[in-house]
Amino acid sequence: MSAAPASDDRGSRPIEPDDPLMRTYTEIEVAYLLAELAERGRRFGLLFPSATTDSVVDGRVLVRFGNAPASTVLNLLSLLRSHDHDKTEDDTPCDS
Image (cartoon, rainbow, N blue to C red):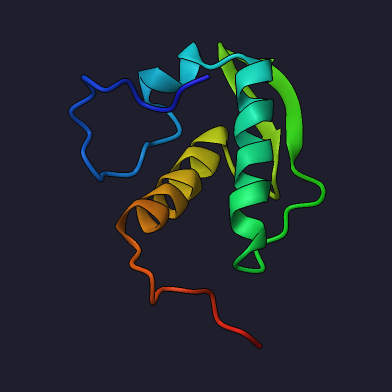
């Protein structure tokens, strides 16, 4: 299970739904990414109780995540991972 390969030159650009990279993910890998998204997002109140893999069409795994493609999951994870990587000791989610 891996997001974009280390040699990927995308930088911080979002992954587009029709990006060829999206054809490399299996349903199992996307299911693991959904689990990671749920775990990382929970601290921020981001809940995705019904997010699950749906099917594979044209080599791309579809996700039941509203009307979002699996690339949205990767883009959200990228933001959360970036936050975890860049945060300082003073950074904590809002207490509300």
